[in-house]
Length: 108
Length: 234
Image 1: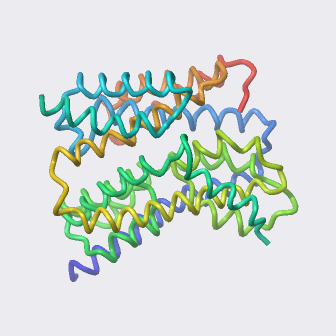
Image 2 (image 1 turned 90 degrees about the vertical axis):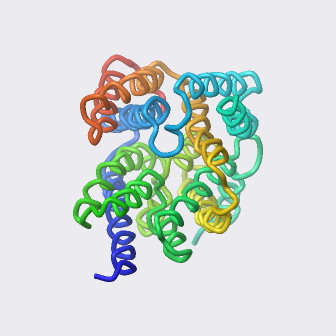
C-alpha cells in the first residue's frame, strides 16, 4: 500500500481508538450519579492514572526529554512546583520558567 | 441551543494566570515538529491533532509507524495509552449532566476531553449553574482543542528552526503544568492519596510492564485512595 494511505489509515485508526474511550465514558456517565460510590471510585482512579502518567513522564520519559538527566528534571520540577505555590497558584510563571531553567541546566 | 455567555466563559479559561495555553502550545509545537520528522505532511499532522487530540496516543502512532507496526498493533497500543480518557470522562461528565440538555452535546463534546481541559473543568465547574455546565465545558474544550490544532501547524512550520535544546525545553513544560494542577487539586484526603500513590506507583509498575503500567498503577492507587479516603469531596 502507498505510504501516504498508510499514514492516513494510521490517523483514522488512532482517532477511533481514542474516541472509543471518550464516547464509552460519555455513555457510562448517563448511568452514573454524582452522589454514588462508583463516581467517587472513578474520580480517585482518574486522578491516580494521571499521576501515574506524570510520574512515568518524569522518571522514565519518552522522546527528547530522555536526553536530560533525571536529577535535573527533578530539580526543575520541584523548583517550579515551589514557584506555583509561592505565587498563589499562578501557572503561567512556572511553566515558562521550566523550559528556560531546563535548557540552562542541561547546557551547564 | 448553546448558552453563548457560559460558552464564552469556558473559552476565557484560556486567558489569565491559570491559562493552559502555554503548556498546550509547548507540547503541540513539539508534536508538530516531531510529526514532520516522522514523515507526515502538514495536512496529516493537523488532521491528527484535529481528530485524535490526545498527545500520548499521537506519539505512539508516530513511533509505531516508524518501526513499521501494523494498523492493528497501532490500534491496540493507542487504545491502551488513551484508555485513561474513559475514567476521566466518567469522573467529569456526571457533574455536567442536566435533564434539559440534549444528548448530542455530550456525545460530541467528549472529543474535547484531555488532561488540560479536564483539570480546568474539575477546578471550575462549581462556579457555573448546573443547567449550563455542559456549555461551559464546550467552551473550555473548544478553546483548548483549537489551540492544539493551531499549535501543531505552527510546530510543523517551525520545525527547521527548533534545535534539540529547544525541544527538550518544550517537553518539560507539559509535565510541570500537569503536576502543578494536580497539586492544586489535592484538596481532600482521597485525592491526595490518589495523586501521591499514582505518582509513586506509575514509575514502579513501569519497571515490570511498560504497556500496562499507567492503568495498573492508577487502578491500584485509585482504589486504595477510594477505600481509605473516607468522605470524598470532588
